[in-house]
Image (cartoon, rainbow, N blue to C red; front, side):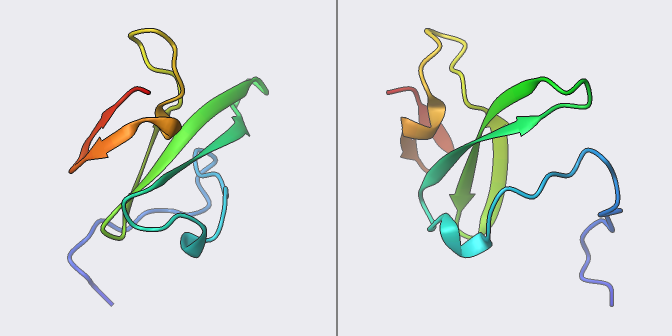
Length: 80
């Protein structure tokens, strides 16, 4: 079935299972720690924006604050 979106290879090693979709309500975020390919811990923040999920580093480049605890305004997150 073609939904118009890119077909992704879910066997790709860059994919990580972090939680169920229902664990992050729309308009909120959650932080996770994952292992990189180099087996280092990486803190990420996952945001649910109207059913679309986005992941980024959980550390703000401004002062290192946790972005998962920041404030969402549309698709913009401001560190706490």
